[in-house]
Image: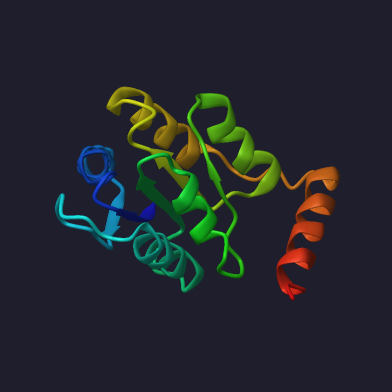
Length: 149
């Protein structure tokens, strides 16, 4: 799978570990930065990941900041993006299976590397079920997304 990955300075060390993990697992990685620990603004990197997914440069995206919250909020500002902060295995797959999440947000100051890579694996292995109730709810999310004012 092709995965767009980005992080701010707080998420940079975890992003490096995630990129290495993804490459070792045979995924193609599109790394949109940042490339160091110098302070940067998380919306820039979250938007780059979201644009990469929206524009087809990757099938899914992963964005990392200190808590995951800001990055998720920024990614969700782009039409067609469904992002959530995830810090556990269940939510990682459930948010894809039920809600068709396409951008995973992680908090580097909240979880460690082992938990993060387990979450990433669950996120990438999951598929939207397409069950009627989930499809109906996804359609409602998409309507909200299209009708922003």
